[in-house]
Image (cartoon, rainbow, N blue to C red; front, side, top):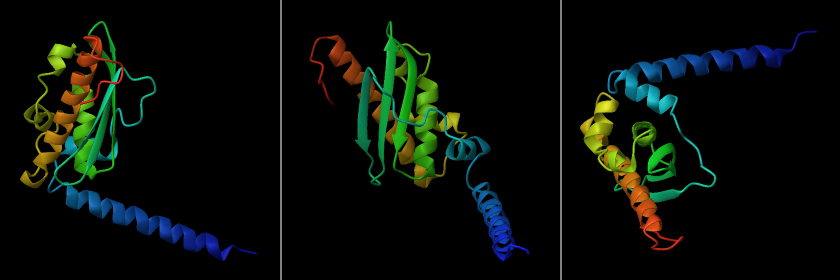
Length: 158
């Protein structure tokens, strides 16, 4: 006895793979390979337990991003992010945290939207605001760390 559902499941899987390939092909005409990779396989995505600092920002498009930092001896040992936004916001969060990891706090303060865009080999003009969201969120997390360090309180928030 054969399982009729098995054939249907295989057809659905094949169609899903074909659709995904078509979407990726179309996106490849708009986004660089680096940007697509950061969208589909983001680095550092996830919540961080016991972060030394974190910040949440809502962008002009409504996307929200949170960046977490683990800092030792004024060096960012680990950075992570969460975003409820589009693939471009995710790519920018991934790139911002990637650029920040290993840098001193002072060096990370200089990570700009332009540097995030360069790391992704650019973005369409309609999505540049995502790099601004990631940069601002990173700067807010750094500011929170510095306020805590200066004794402004454990609950310092920007």
